[in-house]
Length: 138
Image 1 (tube, rainbow, N blue to C red):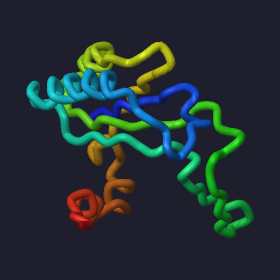
Image 2: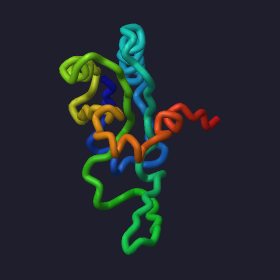
Image 3: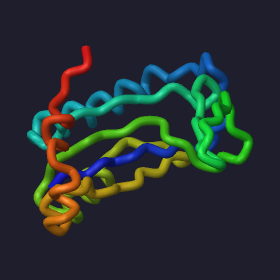
């Protein structure tokens, strides 16, 4: 079972583009990341720049509308993610509980949809999806 663990740092929605990271916290997080890797559960991980450097594309009325960050209506934003493969939801929760997160951070755990989760007609409509997942863009 694959799970995405989403890091939600409260207050990150207003972080400036040049937000500075604490080297000690980064080192602690690296130890956690290495533990995930060493246990053989880590698939990938990344941190994300703050929303002030991002953009949103909405489709109201069928037209693409671009809004540059920051986004005033945002209450929670993603700061990064881990993709892990474990045997159960509880195992994903157990890994999240070991994260050296601070008081202002939340980890949301979401199971990744597998093609086998869907009925045959949906699987047929998504034919070729597995090949897209394995695309190497650069």
